[in-house]
Length: 127
Image 1 (cartoon, rainbow, N blue to C red):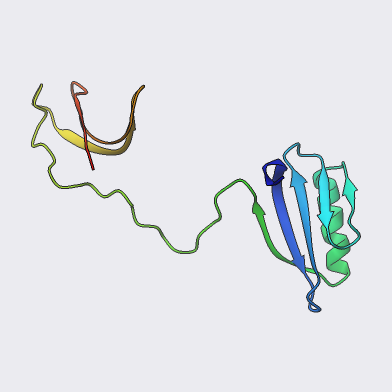
Image 2: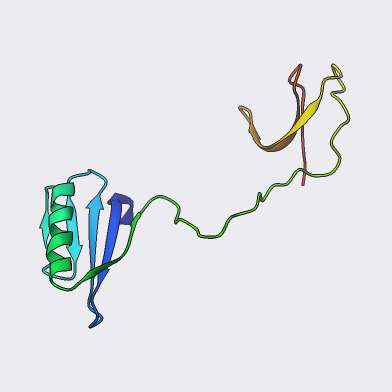
């Protein structure tokens, strides 16, 4: 069912009670798990009203996130595809410089490749 959810708000209270409010991908339907268990079709306006209602009742927003997006990270990720050794000195077809493309794709394949900046010659890298 999470494929129908666009955004979720998680609320908690000091006594350990939890509530989740889900805005569905139609941008209109809202579902509440916990609390009074409301289900309504008023979209963002209802989410705001529900958040106000439950924060007034002692709940705090613990977390809110887009469900189908990657979770934000606090640490900085290093490039997981650093340029490998073995770069050709120049394009074997036209002699122009060659650059590394870690996520190159054509109609049939996707992956790391050396590409010519001139004639667009390419060489796929194999693992």
